[in-house]
Length: 355
Image (tube, rainbow, N blue to C red; front, side, top):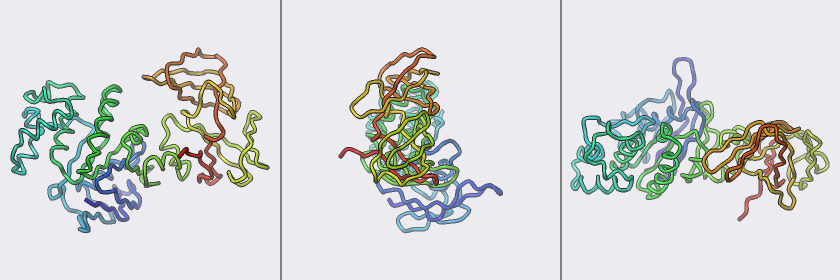
């Protein structure tokens, strides 16, 4: 199914919620809507579903203008943050509801197949109220998958789950969506989710569509600082700098030789991702000395917050690392991992990717 949004806008009263959006998710692929809370992701999903009508612009499905066509007249599945299930129905009845409405045969077999994929087959005779939050969300996802709608819309479906459940379901969803049965549009605030799901990503900020394309391409080559900030968690480390005679100079008397083609002379903004930093030096690395102001451990990752002569920075380290506040630490970075942005915020140079 080919969905196209052409110059879509949405205003609520005098307030613009969406500026002119042109977007055509790839048929049979996953498109992630990535942006902060209130960026416009839910508004876009509701317009795609037919739950709301755009203020201006048009929506097309397979060359048919469906602008203003009610959701009841569209073949769409939608999953929300909340665990929306029918409380008076068993899990099996919840999953099979859209199949029965269409008069399909072998409903029980299809329900069991989906339930087994989402590891809830043992709960088919139970009611949603007896399940955990993660299990209830699996039921909602199973019902959406069972419908086999050509368009599946998911509005931060894992946001209300705990960390362990989110990690578990992310991997399962990436596998389930890989079948290509549906065009999937998945809204999230988390860059890690976009990277795991793969496919394509549309970066949304303050009601504007900033960039759309293959997820890895946007992650590695954000068009500007706005995209880089939206697609970085923890935030990209950013600093004012200056390039003269192929030398990048930053505060704290840090000077880094740069290839001639990197950027023209003048003021720039230098960025590097927290994951590019490490505790052990490799050939060609530069060392950044700092004082620990906070050390966090999350799952198998450690986040080290340092105060340096350049300013504060965050390092994302694999494994568990404990550092006391006030400890002096040196982290290391390859100059090849630097992003260079111009004074107009546009990307001038990105790290070279290995083939």
